[in-house]
Length: 386
Ligand code: TGC
Ligand code: FAD
Image (cartoon, rainbow, N blue to C red; front, side, top):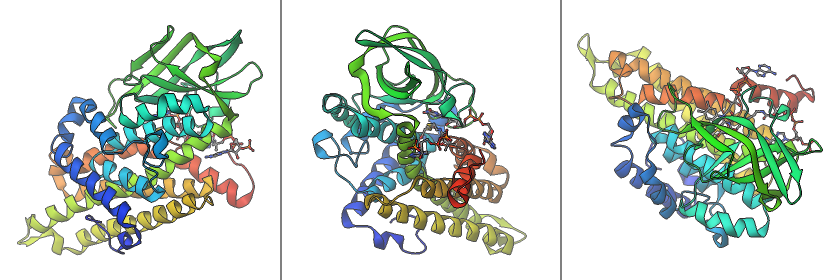
């Protein structure tokens, strides 16, 4: 592992996993790192990179080759997320949504026709997807969703609103969750050019600026019943997709710590105050050591989750613990790095403040810090406190 790796966790990776990480890093260092601050400032997502993501196998890497994936391990998938978020959480969000929230539900809950129709194109980046679960009235409690899918002959007619949807204005298809006539939550693959479907980009974001976030408005959107994911019945299906994405986020957070640590270390070595580099000061060293500790803990947690995942022993509460812990640690690390940089740290010349602001979103989406506390709390006590 070419970055921060205090406990040599990379020794636990297979040669294939290391290769995937190296190739991803090489590509991102050449084609994303030099431009990311500008994209973030302009509030644009680098669409031109999407086909390159596809060529490099960064989308749906764990899926079987028959569907356009690479049959890669969960660790390899995690390392892709690590490298993307080492550059910017917005790049990781794009790939998380495409892989875990669009390709995974189609693979896991879709028909064979749906898999063959959509997955290879999604893997190549020819089709872009989004995932509409959250609604304007409160994302933490998706079971209370108001979006409805009314059966009408051989079609479903979907009406409702979805809020804060990553890739919303980029997407060709949206995986939309809605309650059917019996009140059961079902998933639908909705082509975004279907009449009645609108995406409205959310402006003025101060976080995740190099990512497209949208409101989806579905006004009597008619889709063929064949667009429903046949095996997805109930909230648990939608939540199982979140488990995949949250797992990747645990790795991404470690990547963000790696980035802000190196930047702060480099700055501290060269910044001289009172006649000595600030890296020689105990207070500054304490901050750097906290970052190394946070990164080491995050990486070990994510690695263990990856192994459990591939052994089919992973519980969603275990993922919640790491999502909660790693993302909050990354947010703290980015704040400390910003502090070490002094005044320079408030500009986009340095990555710390960009990561810090991005991580405010990451701490909130895919289940807030407090919601994950309550998920683990329920798991260990057997008592729900939501
Ligand atoms: P609850 O009774 O807890 O669960 C209903 C059924 O689902 C099962 N389940 C899960 N299964 C798999 N993975 C999970 N994470 C699961 N969580 C729950 C559960 O066992 C149950 O199964 P069954 O068979 O007994 O029916 O339902 P609840 O209504 O009490 O839900 C509570 C809560 C808080 C856990 C849940 O609603 C929740 O996770 N809320 C947070 C919502 C959230 O994370 N939204 C994210 C939206 S997507 C997003 O943010 C994308 S950001 C872009 C990016 O990823 O980069
Ligand atoms: P709320 O649920 O209204 O929560 C508000 C506050 O109340 C939080 O602090 C929360 O922790 C707290 N709270 C809520 N319930 C309890 C409780 N029982 N006890 C204690 N405290 C509680 N969603 C998607 O479906 N698809 C996407 O692609 C997607 N992308 C996103 C991208 C961005 C940039 C952002 C910001 C969000 C995205 N989301 C997406 C939505 C995200 O998942 C939600 O924002 C998140 O789940 C929280 O929902 P909410 O914002 O409605 O907050």
